[in-house]
Each structure stands twice: as structure tokens, then as C-alpha cells.
Length: 188
Image 1: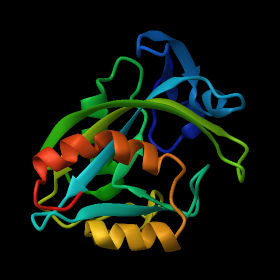
Image 2: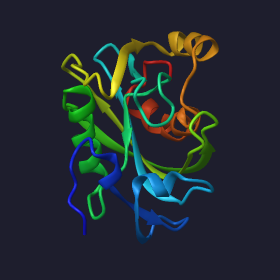
Image 3: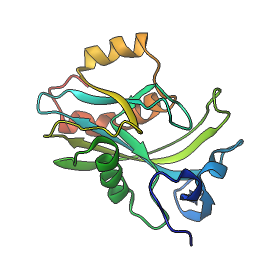
């Protein structure tokens, strides 16, 4: 099995899965995203501050796909045999420079979204997490171009006026029941 080295995208391996989320194999990250896209394990994290505002990140312009678009606080891929929860905590620290004070599982969602700009395909069995952030993010500029905390109304305005990741609606819709349970007065 290959060694994992952060930042060396070409050496990162992903778990391929069947529609029920059972591991079926391993693939190199970029080959898993080439058309038609291989179904693989991923995760998405939604973080909220103590005022109930959602943290958004604008992906760095150097990202291999979907550069410069807004999305949820953090997303990525577990390494083979890495628990999605641990991967979510790891990547939140790497991308945002902080650890969630609380992180709860919020189910899974599967989607397939081609990226017209890169020609790559996001075909993911995505594990969702919702959490609380008590520290100010200190994003890695290689990963994150900008961050913003938004209310539900401000998110609606941003969705109407700024580009978002293709998967954002899918993961938000699927995570919303847990978001509402953990953040009942936030209007989500």
C-alpha cells in the first residue's frame, strides 16, 4: 500500500465503495475522479459558531476541481481504512487550522456531479458531519481562499449570487435534519 503524504495528490488512495457503502477496492485519487467517475468514500463537514451561523469556505483557486467556489466548512476523502469521522477531524484541522468542539454524524448521501471546468467527476458516497466551532479559523491558503459565517438568510442570498460547489445542495439537504436538531433556533 502506498504511503500518504499531504499535498501530494497523485499518491493519495481512496476507498471505492458499492451503493450501500461497502468497500470494494482502492483507487488512486485522480483516477477515481476521471469520467465516468468511480463511486468512492468521502465526507462533508458543516460547522456552526455559538450564534448558530454556518461556516462557509471558498475553495482555493489552486484546487484541482471546483476552484474558487463556495462550499461547506470542509470536505474530503478518508484514506483507506481510516474512519470517516477521523478523516473529518483531520482535514478540518489541515484546511481550517482548528478542531471542532463537537462533531456529530449526520448520515450519508450519494451523488454524481461532473465538473465541466476540469472534466472530472465527483461520484461520492459522502459521510456527513455537523459540529460546533469555538475557535476562529486559520485556513491554509493552499486549501481555502476565504471563509464566512452566515445566517440561513445570508446563505440564501449567497446561493443566489455566488458560485457554490455542485455537491453543496445535496450535502446540505441530507445534513439538514441533524443541523436542525443541533441548532434548533438557527432557522436552518
